[in-house]
Image 1 (tube, rainbow, N blue to C red):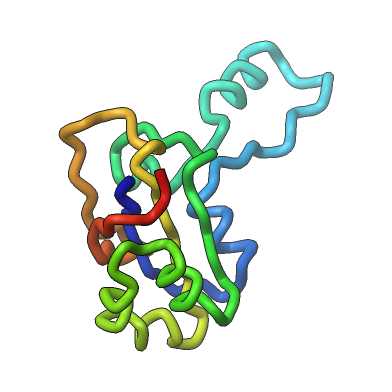
Image 2 (image 1 turned 180 degrees about the horizontal axis):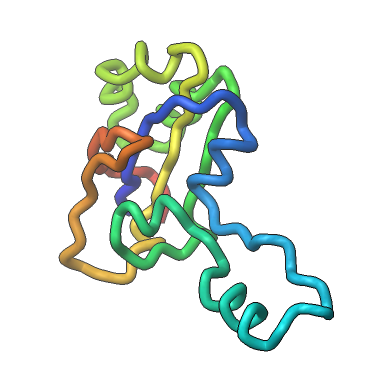
Length: 130
């Protein structure tokens, strides 16, 4: 299974997750009009990363890692762990966030990833995961 690797910088984990995971705005109170409620439903959930990539992503197969052991975590998943050496300094940078999108998250065989305004795409890596 391939793992698509992205690296970005966020001030904290909460901001990273707000970008890399879908979330819902608070539900409007019961006094709003049907039109306002429908508008809320239409714009939720918000999934900014998927919107920037212009694709459907199943968030069950996305990981956002902010811990200090990002490089070791990624190495533990790869068939060739030494491939992490090329991006290790970026992973160790202050406020860096590692985002992993497993190929099962993608709903298209022909989709190709690219940088987003908040994440740099580092490539697809073969994993030991099946």
